[in-house]
Image: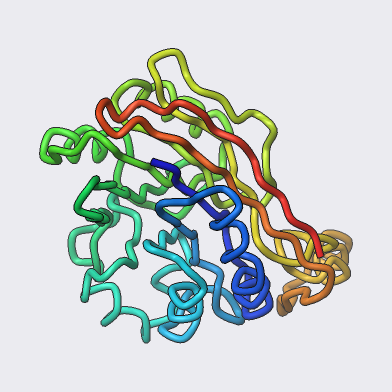
Length: 256
């Protein structure tokens, strides 16, 4: 099974860029399933039904999210439908939606789990305890975890903690693709951050001038997404269906 995972998609321009290139990527690499982090896919951050629809129309099978997912209340009904949009599983049980989605293609099943880190992030439940609970309940061999976290140390710790227990641990949130993709000793594919799909000359997808001014003055600023010179960052994971072990992971990067 070949699984394509796209890092955080930023704004409408990010969605448009994904839509222009995803079909050819899937054809070139023989992709069986596509997972996209869409928590910043709406203008002004967050995710809306419209931005989710754009990602599904582009070719996503599952949309993962992160700390901005609940900022747009219009997405709440879509989360509750449990039709492929998930939020971090270690949120409070009263939050809309769920943190797990099982993609069933008859020949194989892929269980996608979304978690959020605690270090430097908004308060949430312990992701290590939550994944232990989930793995006791879920009967699947092929499991992909999107770990939406700030600290590289927390991400690496999660990767080693889950090595041999899941197929892949893929970091999101920092919007910067890291060069540490690998198969961990017990067969789990890992990367600290898959990167983003947004303006390549931006800071996390936001116009660089705004972020520079914010650092210079320490004053609040209204963020605006950079819609110029787009890039797409992703990873391709090959998983052995019978064992759930990862066989290969490679980075993919496309620039406008």
